[in-house]
Image (tube, rainbow, N blue to C red; front, top):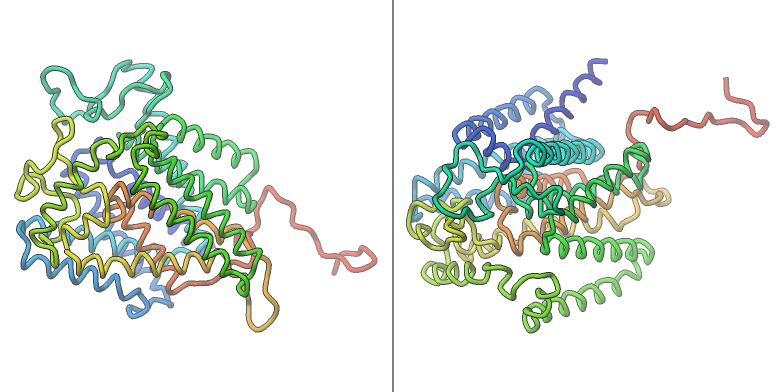
Length: 457
């Protein structure tokens, strides 16, 4: 009973951590920025306490992926040459704190618990978001701004609203996070997690299909073109993973050749037919102003190409060189809208060379975890498990998002990246089946019988 209560407490802590990380925008809108910093600090302290109480036997500091250490050390060292030293101290502290929470979650949660708690957090965020949008639509009946933001004079741009009161108008809705792009990405993650749980038989069929429908509806109502591209990428990777499973290790080379050719075609389409491709998605060739932002960022990159301007994660728009660098609808832009360009800006070419191994080594591990048949010892291979697919699909969505957003470097994106990087490094166990450690009450467990149909004594 004590062990059961402990695991229940760990799962509850993980759900809270994921809700706060993935719903961070909504938390800031509700409580304000100072209170958010306090909550983030308490979450970090709670993570350390949970880790000290459980003392995972498998934890060894040297088993963490080395590129994570390299990146954090480079970020910390950049304080010395930073153009905004005080802000860099805060940015590095936030990066380390997020890493600590991610490492704790990776070590205290099993793969099944990680899937379940992530999915539960997505259910909470989707449910709260629809409740919020419903309240705005029924009671407020007009676009809503946060309580701490002053109403500007004249016409207010849509980007400033927490909710635009478009639930009954077909969207785009923004949810509790106040952004249709971020809400759409949450829906994409939810669709992946809910779909895997449903296919693996880890949830009741009725509730599973209902939540899949909610996630799919959210994708439609957020109307984010970049999320539809990410969904397409996830489906393509899923098809390649299933193909790789079918071919086996010996004949898998053709999968890599076809995948490489498809990536080359996609890059060529983006480079040479950009206006046509993005026009099909209702976007301009520069992805609604992102091209302008990238051009301005590159001008700064050219000034400090090797070590960058200093790590800070979110841009401090009140100091140079970010002050007045780029604005959209009168609001200062707080990121490069491309994670790789942001790393280049803040940590230079050296930073990109350090960040890339975190990404590509994790990609390699989640791929082989998805396509390799599990084994237990020297015996024959065991059947594939559906639940082995979700890390690859979630990581794919994260990678596609990194091309138009910098979220992978901060908060939920960095948390998810480090969890997958760490857990696939020290806990590469391939699931032999999709059942939970405990019995599922909605399914009958068959009683083994002998050849005469009698149950064993």
